[in-house]
Every structure is written in structure tokens, then in C-alpha cells.
Length: 363
Ligand SMILES: [Zn+2]
Image (cartoon, rainbow, N blue to C red; front, side):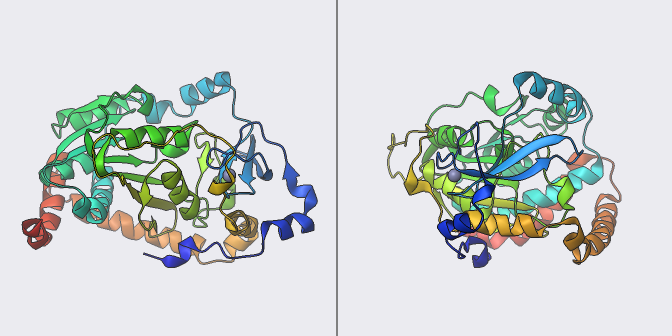
């Protein structure tokens, strides 16, 4: 855990505005988190150098695509660029199973003590089912949804998991039925994250947990030109991701970053102590109470400083190939001796579960 990721200290917003009055702009979509319409433009191109306007809320630091692509553009984008990812019938390669298996171990390490056994677990955007497969091994009842039909079929047939092919919008869940709901790399694609998280909260049992992971807008591990693309409608940092949880009525734990800083994750717990708790309204209204003083400047400092030249002068572009080589080597070693994804996960998970055994006995 790194306390510095919650730091929003810096010059006041009013000071910044006085210095740079030309930077203010209009937006078509109000801030999904605080309702403000006061924004500044942070980028005008996407990773393919096509026009894509990204704005930042001066009141809370949330970044989003504005104007939103038209429904026709969205359909064309998903039909073309996302065909392989979301419409394909490919199944994960063993190296991907290994990589996602390690991610599942890390995620369960962080959340396992929050979930009673046997818990009701749901994963939206379940990928190849690695997180749920480990959840089942931990003794939980699991269920998932995955938009990639090939991955959904793989998780069902190879791992024996109840995973349906579909998107978040296709899910029907009973209120108050889940102990843990996972949303890994889903929220940034949604048109209304606040409404989605608020709805997800109603699916939790009292005291249940919602685990969210998204790309970190403050990441500097990749070249700045590759940061923004049309698949991601919203960009969060640790501070406003936590605030999103709060506004949806959840109590966020301390957020954490991936090893390269590229992703940010947080767990929000439902604070109600009994059934039928008071769920907050999910409508986006301008509510100054949800502003986050200092966070806009914190995010802007990172975005403005993350230029192509600065990137090349930092260790990241030179460390990254070495890191990738080490990852590939670890994956090569990890998948040796098997050609079956289930066998690979059994081997990987059983090794970690054995290490957790004392904890398992005490819970
Ligand atoms: Zn805002």
C-alpha cells in the first residue's frame, strides 16, 4: 500500500484558473463523478493519431472522452477494432492463462479475508475464468459473465465454470445476493460508471465487497501517445476511483497500483449492517460535496509532464523490454510440462493455496 497515491496536495484550483484562464472549456457530458461541467482539454488525439477529445474535470480530476462518440461510431469501432477481442472465438493461450492465473492469485490475496465461506462470487468481464476458478478452489460459489464468446466457452468447457457470454448490461442479479462482485477492466468502458457501481452495490449482501480495477490515468509506463483510445470512455486515478465508490454508497479501502503503475484497483465494502440498506441515488447531479480539491492539478501535473521526450528520458522505456523478457521467461517456465489450462491453474493455485493453508484454517 502506498499512502502517497492518495495525496492531492498542491496549489489551489482557483490559483490555477487565474494563471491559465484559457484552459477552461465546455463539455457535452457532465462529470460522472461530481456533476461539474467545468473541464479542461487534456488530449485531442487517440493512440492511432485520430481525433479524440479527452477532458478533465477541474473539480475532481476525472478524465473522460468528450464529446462521446456517436452510437454509429461506437458500433463501427466495436465491429472493427474490437472484433478480435469481443466477438472472436479464440481461446486463451497457455501463457495468457498463466499470466491471468498470477493476477488471480494477487487479487485473491487482497480480498480473500473479506469474503465469508462459502461466499457468492460474481466476476463481470471474467476473461478465461481464472479468478473464479481460484474462488471455487477456495470454497466459494461462483458465477461469471464474459463478452468474448471464445473465452466464455473456454471457461465453461475447460474449467467447468458457470460463465455466460455477454456484457455488464446483460447481467440479471438478485438484490442482496453477492458476497463479492469483481469488475476488472470493465468500468472504464461504461457510459455511466456511477450508475453502474450504484447498481452493483444493490447486488451485494450487507457487508459485501466490490472489487474494481481500471487503467491508471497517472500511469507513465507506456508512451504518452498510446494512453488514450476509443475503447476507454473514462480514466481514473486512485483518488477519484475511491470517491466513485463513496458516492455509490460503498466504503473504499486503500487503493493500490499494479507493479508498473499501469492499473489501479480498490475494494469497496457495503457499510449496511442489515438487509435492505439505504442505497443512495445513482443519478449524476452537480454536487459540490463530491469535488476533490487538488486532484485535478495532481492528474494534470502527471499528464502535462508525461511528454514523449520526458518518457524517453526516464527508465520506463528501457526497463520495460527487460521486464517483458522476464515475464516471458517466467511464463515459459510456468507452462512447461503441460498443454492443458486446467492442469496449469491447478498446479499454480494449489501451490499458493498450500502457502495460505494456515490462514484458511483460521477463517
Ligand atoms: Zn468531477
